[in-house]
Length: 478
Image (cartoon, rainbow, N blue to C red; front, side):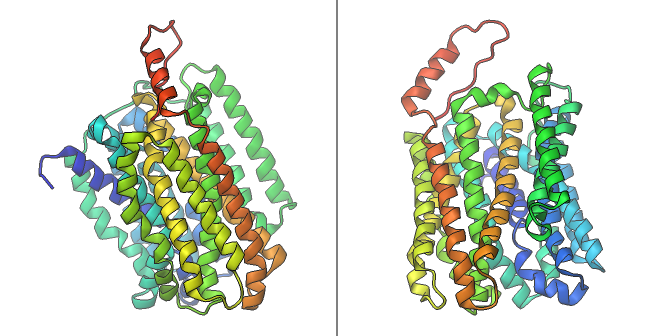
């Protein structure tokens, strides 16, 4: 790594921070029994050690993007990373379950501040010709963090203690902070105004929706709390759209959704997260509960899935630069769906692990093919000055998709099975995995709606023509 190469430094700094933020979505799940033994608390408290992070992360992503445009993206990245590092230390040292939940919520805030500006900082540092490769590797790192959460968490809990899940973030964060200050270039969005009403409506609406999804299974989908969250959240998001259509400085310009590439890739991202998060959540427990593996042994057996991005993603990123991302994204989603269909067909109480390996490889390859070019497609679908908010919106939709996937697939599981025996677990897992496969199949259809490369080139030519005043052109997508 050359000392003066800003693109390499930007990739290392932003992808490492992004890996930590994405990892903390699921890494704590394998530590819950140890946390309960050490800190006490009921099942609801344990759920909130996971959900407090998800909730603040999802709700504040768009605010993080807007604050970065207003006050400086490098500055906000450093603030978010500092908060994430400090709250990780707080989680490791938590004396009780309440303190741990509070620290997890603070971690989510820090992650929401640093994640959306990471891509914008990387974009500004990487030459256009190499952005496909850089985005592919960045996306693969984040996807790998999500998939490897159970393995990393299980290994740390088994050989160290649950506190080290959070404590390991601290030295990494402390090392990244001076590098971010010295090696990242400051940038801001073109509009210095902050859309306070839009930010408040979007944050409150997302809070209601995500909170309801998190509480749906435990409280009941017809409970007043859940129904209030869903209805109020949806109403606030409708009000957010209405406000954005009329304000001069919108948080999220609604015209972006008239761009077929932007709308399609965001739809595909939400549906993919729904199927993938929900499936990984159940399958990681399947290996432990029904097949009798320890947390680390289960994580090792997930490696045919989780290790594939390291092999496939860089190649997919380079290929996306040559032929465009549309077909690669669609192929990746189709492979993910095929992997889950394979699982649904073979799941049984005592299925041999070797029978599961092809499904794991298919799913991992598909995940790598999706994450590698999807960022290139997303960032290429908007103008450079809109990339921060586009990243925030996409990450928020992924988080909502993940929460929705866990809620829906867990509901299907509990309606058909339970944890009492391998047979009952298989009874619930099979229909849940079919639902996950259907969600990713729908994501495949959405990805195919991304314009072809020739259509994108025609759009680029039209965008280069003189525009009427007040009619901004959108950048094409590969």
